[in-house]
Length: 274
Image (cartoon, rainbow, N blue to C red; front, side, top):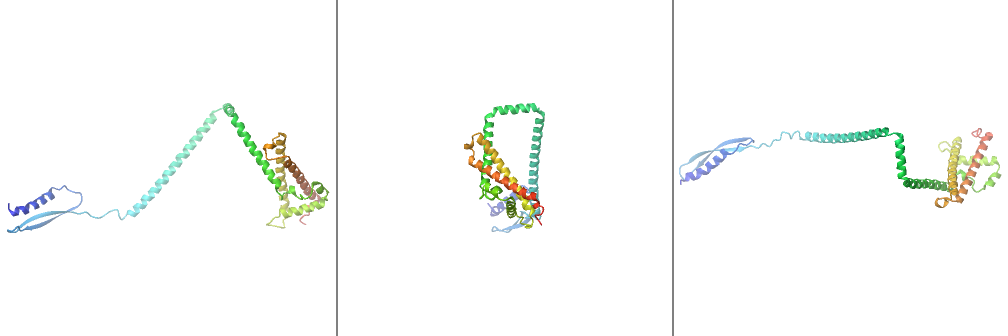
């Protein structure tokens, strides 16, 4: 075989491959070259067309990528908020529908049927109602008794004013002298810090404090007396000694209040600021 054929055949195969290749969508550029073969004889020039595929590195949207990113984020936040709003509205509508249906069902039932249903429910749960009612009553009563016991232990109360003196000794003190001492104690205990020269506000606070203490003692005495009549003192936080103490404090508090009213009735209140 001739040497020229050996050199020409590969080139012909390359040329045929390039011609039979399927077209591509990417831009191409065809360039012609001349290959000079000198196999030992005379030079032979063979034209070869080489196709170059051009891949431009241009991204049309790169310039606007930040803006697009921001828009995407904005759209994402907006979509999330819209979804949450839709879910909230749906839940609200369901609740409104449920309440509306419940109200309509209640209106459709007659009061007699409601009473019968309640009576049937009470009969079916009679034991639980008795147990829960007794437990609740006990807790409330015990709370009132404990609060009263703690109140009786306090020293700065008007019911315990001049506690170093017995009730008989208080009655022996002249009313004018006792009234002056009480007014002086009122001005010291209920002084108006913002206006120390205000002598009326302490008197008002004294009357309010006396009424509050009287309510606590009356409530304690009434409850403890009922418990003693039912012979249930063993299971409640009270006893005869505490009950007697509450009655004594109530008597002393009534005497203090009477002393104040007696002092005010002698026109001392009208001339108090003069």
